[in-house]
Image 1: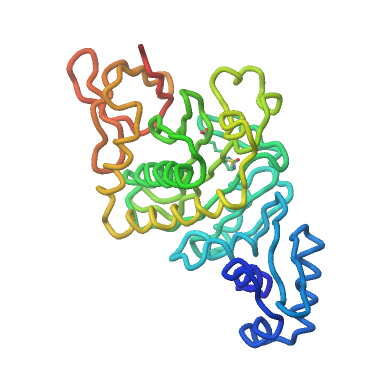
Image 2: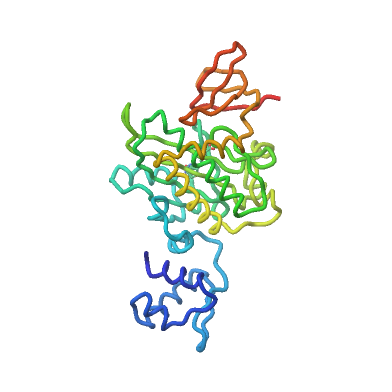
Length: 324
Ligand code: BTN
């Protein structure tokens, strides 16, 4: 952990912390602590200094900062043990793909304040205006057959729903496989990109986009009836850093369920929030359209659809439309 992350963590853990205590706990001089506090202030962190009581944190800027996120998430097993934040990228998933090929270990998370070529599922564009959303990608290297990679999408959607319930007074619903919906409109999505051989996964990049503080004008007009943001639903802005940290904690816990063979717990939770199950659906996968009733999720996270001809079909991808 960096010095800044440790200082922010200590400032969050107690109302006041003295310079002497910080200095002895972190093994640096009081002058070094002062210099780091000045640097944090220049980034927008409001830190009060009192000759008698020491330092206290009064406010944080509306920006994503790697040390701040590290200090907020505490001990994690895998997801978030290394965090990097870019002001602008083409796509956080592109950056991570390059780093993955260079061999970085799993758990690395790359955030960007804006993306110029953010992408969604099925080759769609993902609008990512600066400072409004939470746009990030996570590198995972699970020991998994490619067929079971759908589990990661289910895990990510479940973790997102948990974090949203923790952080905002809204009831998100999940639309298979990975859309987070509020009042029937999409507020977040997950793009799972897999690299591997026929029988084993080399790495997976989970790209996650949350429309946090977008205004209506930030969304393309074509999406006005189908997409929304947390700000639009709540009527106020949300604390992006706090939500981002909650998501990383929940993703770490959900990923542990997948790797430790506890996927059934996630699948049950996912099913209970999934608006797709029990509904008549139309699934477009490539050129193929399947119409039927979404019955359940199988042990690998695929959707089982009973077609109008009575056959049970296994759906692992595609675009699902809920019929009336
Ligand atoms: C979807 O279509 O629902 C998935 C959207 C995923 C968007 C995120 S934003 C961060 C990451 N980088 C990208 O280019 N896409 C994903």
